[in-house]
Length: 435
Image 1: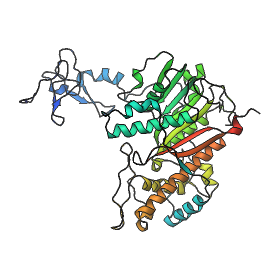
Image 2: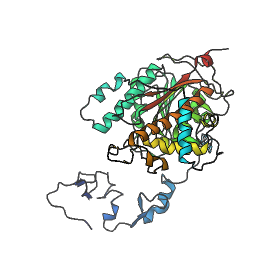
Image 3: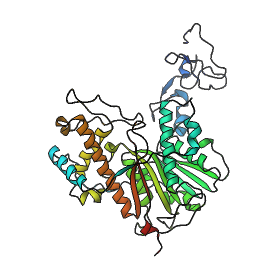
Image 4: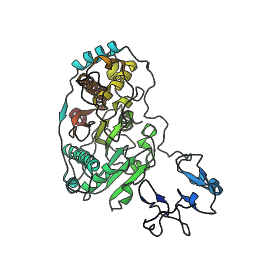
């Protein structure tokens, strides 16, 4: 039964007639021929079939008389696995004790290990000219402006490393809507033979890659969890064998480790060591890790975040930890404490600053650690940053074992995002020199 609304404009022709009170407007969804309401609000139609919750996904509904037909095409149905799906290929080893260690032992271990680290996080906020107009656009809100600053700096770092060029494939892990790949495309419109491979496990709405139909540029989206992705079986990469560049904007927790394994621990690598690869146009870049079924790996640039969501099984720096007398238990504790650096802290006295909010696109860790009862807010934040540094140092060590020279950089100001560390890597000088 329809509600009556007074002094309200009529719905746009061809659009849903349901009035959304919360938004004070009519629904904007397109309706079918002869219908007044969209599928979501079809229950308002008189004489229509009863709508029920989809048994595959309770987030949407379907008319009861069309349930069988819907189940055959629902996006949440079980689908045949693509050829590049290999279960748990990038998962890592499940060995190790996951129990939580004593607080004092964890604090002592952290202090001892960090003192011996030879790893500094530099400051280098860069930008790329292709985003300047959009950064100056007053129509962009504060949130959009922050994302644009991050994307601009990532492109600036790719250019500085000689990775931003044509005749290669950019593999964007955790692509979401594909905005980072979009700006890479905008920066390289004049370059030839450019491929952009977007990896995202979710079915994403409002994708920007679908709007690009330029000649000489190929977009392809893979809906698959990084954990199960075998790049050597992706048809696009097997056929053309382009040099690869790994990219990612805020790969939460274990997703960073999965992406590193996906790039550098593929079956067929010659002992995991890099070999020289072909030169490319529209940018200096040099070749690296060579897989018989794929092109070389030129490098990577990944914005890190959410260390509290890392997992020992997936972590690429296990050997780094074990060599320092640490294991799964300490790693689990360090992951939890790493959230103190960005997710806010619980004040323990009146001198502590108010709780800070984490970056809006990442959920904070809610678990309180037993250590935080006797540390001030500033001390907890410092410990959190040390935990992040230690975890990322293990990733740098992993890259080194694969013949890459990696570094950590504060690529944007903390006012833009508290998760402002960029992991970059290119082939080390020794591994890139032919023997």
